[in-house]
Length: 111
Length: 116
Image 1 (cartoon, rainbow over the protein chains, first blue to last red):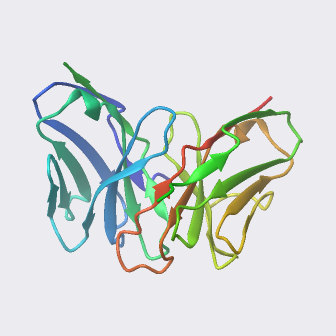
Image 2 (cartoon, rainbow over the protein chains, first blue to last red; image 1 turned 45 degrees about the horizontal axis):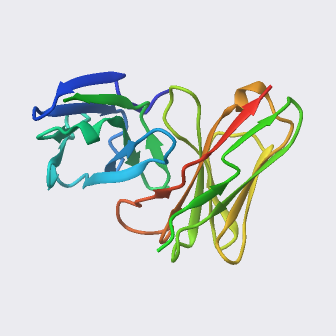
């Protein structure tokens, strides 16, 4: 029973264009939503988060959107850069403080 | 400020053996969580330790056990290894287990376990 789904295993984008990564969740009780980025041979690194009481959070080139009625989360990267090429995981947090991760989306930004 | 360090980085075991993985928390962090990442999957929560006691456990059998030491470092032990235990094991530390926020975890690079 997957509570967090990332339906696109991979995404290819041209440098300078927008990258949009999507995530769907099933439980409306989650209170925080996070995005992590993972390079090969490194651990996941925190990118950006959003509280369930907000619908948008922005940090530089990265913006996370939350649509609670659709139980949908998205990460926008603009402009995309080759260094953004990595696996992106969305994660959700509930009352227990554990994180539940999606399966990840491999982003490739082409120069 | 040192990050999260894990050892060993790679190891190979045979079915039925036991393994111990080690983790040093980021400086100032008092909570440690362990995650298992199988190939093609996202990290899955194993358990969390706070003040040297288990504070939450995921859907893993009792042969997965852990310890947290007074210096906040931690060990993950897996007994009676099975082929499906082959995975990347990630340790993550955080500042406070009951933080009323996003609970941002700082991950180590992981220990890749192969069970033959």
